[in-house]
Image 1 (cartoon, rainbow, N blue to C red):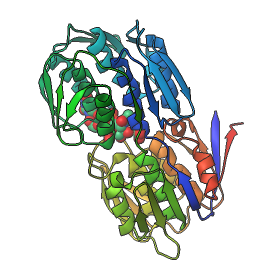
Image 2: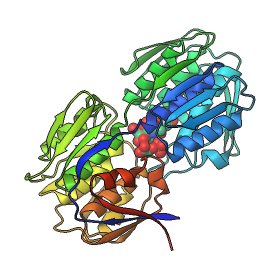
Image 3: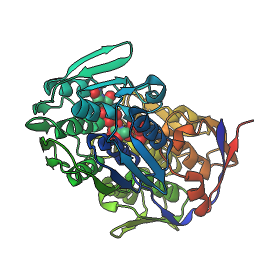
Length: 419
Ligand SMILES: CC(=O)N[C@H]1[C@@H](OP(=O)(O)OP(=O)(O)OC[C@H]2O[C@@H](n3ccc(=O)[nH]c3=O)[C@H](O)[C@@H]2O)O[C@H](CO)[C@@H](O)[C@@H]1O
Ligand SMILES: C=C(OP(=O)(O)O)C(=O)O
């Protein structure tokens, strides 16, 4: 098992290159199953979740290559529609195989995704929507077993806003007979990127990015090429790291337009934020950091995937900041770990009340989920001494070469094998 050793006290400065978005690349990889023709997807981050997805596609019978951040998929010979627990348990996004497999092949058997430290994360909305499109679905022995003739277009009103739920149903609807309308759809940029990719291959999707998506079913998709959009959460994570260290960092290959609410919170916290078309700079030199209140909500509101990072920001900042989580019921696993480092945080229901902590102290801490891990690394960057972050396989699910990128900005961070 590997660990990070993070020694605090360095002021981050310089440029960092942002990778393609994990949460866009994952649905796009599964969407490639919808076409018999080869497709090329570029700007794919080299992450554990991507490797798992590639393994799943290969298990289904697709020919897949992954080199230099480019994935080529030829799903022409897919012959197996079974996604086993052993692969699915490590990655929530594997549920995204369900819609495309069912839509193209009329059958799919996908293990329920494994438990996750941030909450229960059911998939009832995915199943309900597919049933509305005519699928027969049973859930038994931990597997979702689905069959259908050609799926039929339907009017689906999502009970709750679900990102992967919207994506799964959108993919399923692409090859359905007739028109599907998904109302109360997720508006995340990653949903839009998936729609752009599908439309490149001949799908007929309008309205992605609004809460009502219309998909006119087509008989087949052709091939195509697509570049995955930049990772807004990775961008936000580096900006928070820059700001808490009192530094000056520019994220390149980024898309600031997708990060408006986070950038405004950083401005409110005292950072000088400037943006260009594909870059964003946070300059905190000579400025004082103030706590901010944040409340997570679906896009375009404040993203839950930036909540843990802002919890650390608020601990380092002057004043009291409230961090309220409304998307997941158990997404404060980083709080007890930060408390081990001396952070003054109290949990009141779904709100973390964060108070200024004079000096965070290094400690041995455990990463519990992806963004929690990022928050522990950020805390380590400003703590006194050397923080040991255990279980960093969580961070490898979502951050490409994070230690190299941080080192490039002057951070003192090492990846080591645990004794
Ligand atoms: C791979 C990917 O894109 N992951 C993102 C996606 O996760 P994911 O798509 O899993 O998250 P959802 O948007 O589905 O979850 C939102 C809420 O809806 C609930 N829910 C969801 C589906 C369902 O069938 N039933 C149900 O009750 C969930 O438990 C949660 O409380 O969006 C989350 C919310 O922005 C992000 O934190 C994740 O990084
Ligand atoms: C929760 C996340 O991812 P996933 O849905 O893949 O677990 C995340 O990216 O923060």
